[in-house]
Image (cartoon, rainbow, N blue to C red):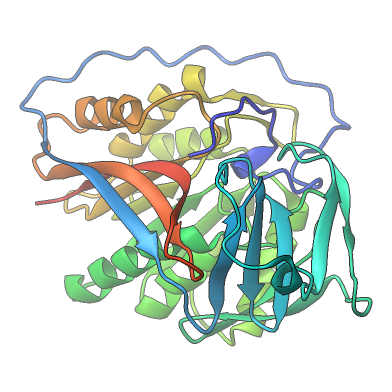
Length: 338
């Protein structure tokens, strides 16, 4: 889990276009009145460490001294990694084989640029996850259009969809470039994907075409996540699975301000309110916050009091290929129906 405080655009990923700076911020809406729900707390499972191992599509080759060496499809990439406070296991000559190196500000909020030691590379390149084709991307904020640690959540969600043996509706809030939405759609779900960035929505649509899943039912919505969820509650729209991966700080397309510690309880409460009578799961991931996973675990248990099931919380980690160290990337908490 990344601990440094950051000002991030929507979806906890500083992708430049994720933050529309032009419109003036709207007046803050009236804060949702919350009350502690009655009923027994869900069962709990913690700590749960979900890890991604190296595979042909992605691998954390090595890490250390504030950097990580990764393999994304055909390319080796070097990026800053503040949590890698140990020393690299591989010799520097292995790191020197990188195709792309991010240079500049090492804070995730800071802009920088990519250096290509071997040959200039285009903005995008072909990638694959579990047979789903998509495009990796070099961005000015060091990210590459996918967060491989989320694969554990994607696999879990696909299993729930397939096991349900009925129509399943999935809501993906702060959906970014759409890998979770594509996994859900391939598994048979009807998906609503929400992100405040027009550019991210455009990337997600492009990934749908690249994955040859254009015939699958995915609604692409460019809107502030909180506003969309509130409107779905008023409309009576309901979902079986909800994913939300909010930023520590962000702005919506009309200047709406998001502060995680102030706004997360209300959004979690809305997520409960827009579940179907037979829900399957609600999955929360949190990046770059000064908190333990116990904080979001407690929030999720309180939010889903009286609904049974269990709340599983812990960290998402990536297992290193060189000597097997685990690199923690984020906190998570998920409610799963009984």
